[in-house]
Image (cartoon, rainbow, N blue to C red):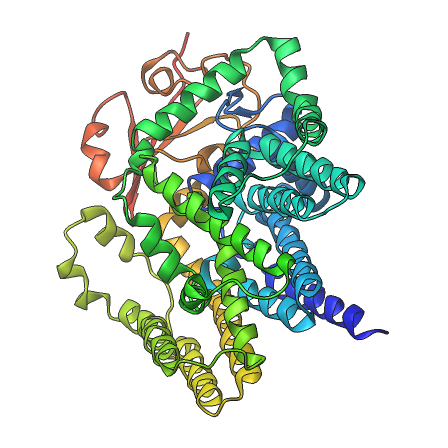
Length: 545
């Protein structure tokens, strides 16, 4: 077995071992995880795979490709958390393999391993591949579209360029089917910005443009075209309206300051983000293929960061495409240090140690704080949060060992870097972060999720299969997914007001947050069942005819 094949197998095995186990250990999180899983579940239940529905009503915010993949996964693994998250876990393994192969092709095997390692062991990039959200798949398609486009531009002979433009169009088309035309917008802005940075015109023929757009339109048109033919332009019209609203206004409580994504990427992508900073200021050297790709990655980073900083709606997800350039630039820095083409700056050692130590301290202190909640509850003004914290969850001092262990390995990494054992130091740094995240997800996150919203989910699960209605009186999709709502015989069963005051034909159960309970107590013929850990549960009996 060649060394390269062995490295690829190692990347696949390590990625599978860290991304796939325990995917079903914690309930799906609101809103996006449950929202998307519910769309896939309703495809399975209704048999309608052409249109996306939530609560069996048309859902125009997203195209269907990711939901098709989730539906396929849930058909294999069951309608559960593992089935909803498996798509991204598999995407994570493939992403590690892809960045290894690109890094090896452009530089060498060391660069490939470093890039995969940076992806595997950075906080948010690692966690995203354990989720059930759209963005990991969407981002991979856009990245591949830009990679193939850039690689094609770097070719000299025309016959060598066309396949690159073809595959670029296919990938951007798949990205468009995953989350919408913003994929092409990002691609176009990157191409324009790249041309400006290059300070000369990018040579591309009409035929090559036709190949790119032909592939993009053919792939995306497989669904957009068919949907328009069968149901008219309603989806595209509503989708465009929704995107304009996201651009102009802060949607769903996600209006945040301009610098939001800068902060999220710097601290959320640790350790890669700290190591990537120096690469932004390193001159572009080496063969043209290497410097061109580095230019593309820097361009991608700034386009995404600026674009989604301008957009009024800001969530952590929107800047996640930056994970590719951040991890690449971090790997580029580490590669140059290992190859001794640049010196290691000790300031990086201390910055890594300082922030890593801070994170380790938080992880170590968290279970201790949760064991002594009486210390923090007087400091919390939110009545709902205080009530949620009263849920009896067993915490142990032993759980602090996760943070303590991370601090110990971090200290080992720092020691190796100070002794100029760079390869071992970088490997230790990122692998310790990956293992810490794995243990944190296995042990602490399920408990945190139970505190935040485990009660309502358990309530919906108890009602599943019973002849009744279940409805949340706060924004969530958990009542749909965990109750397993089936297509209703009554066309008004999605109407909250009808369930509260209309002539319902079977019992209806409701859950609301404790701070909103006064709006419902003593009203709508509701019978209060219990008031427990931040949530109040009601029942309304059927109206006799």
